[in-house]
Image (tube, rainbow, N blue to C red):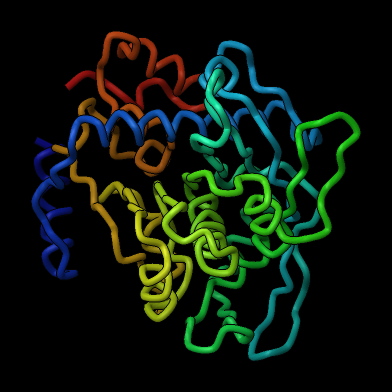
Length: 326
């Protein structure tokens, strides 16, 4: 009864907001692909949590990333921002270099076939502090007509740098998108992120496609994405990235922030309860948890039992009760 009531309420909210209120039709191959990409990002998150001071952590051997993928390089940056009010700086928050993502390709494949750039979500107090001030606006002054971005998210993005996964390698002096562009060359690259990582993935895929000149080589798959900028910026993203999709759980509150004049990206798929192939709890944590998205989209498969999803949820430090059989 409670599930039906929440589903009906969610549908009503979407109707009032002018969104499609019926379950989004998702093809089986789309579900599997996005679920597996979500697991890659979950592995990146876990790598950071297990080794927060290591800028080049090694994936666990039994993880999806460790078993099936080769890490080519790492994305590192600083969670810091100057907090302002009416133009006056009040304080600075955050600081300290951390690992945010990996550039990888499938083991046994020629890297020229394709790459994945996986960017994790918020994982520590510094990042939460910066996120709290993302409602500050930052016009892209060097790119007139391209809109305004969320200052908190973008402040981290501007610090991102690339480190090759080779002995004694250090971070490049240029922004991450420039290094990634040079590494992938003419190969396709899929940028995937969750939560804070979705906002930074938006900036990454847009810069790769536009400033980096990669154009249609760039794809984006974003989960639980906050609003990375205003409507002008959302239109700009849609004009330069030909293939991207945003997947947002209707009961997840993060896609509604920052509030005010910020806007969701254009190609957004609102996931209703009937879209999920396993039951995902409506709690705030479970609704936003990345493994909930992966389990809900991927469902029960020969190599993805309910026990697998519950264990994967526990491995990420969350309650296995977030996912249940329908």
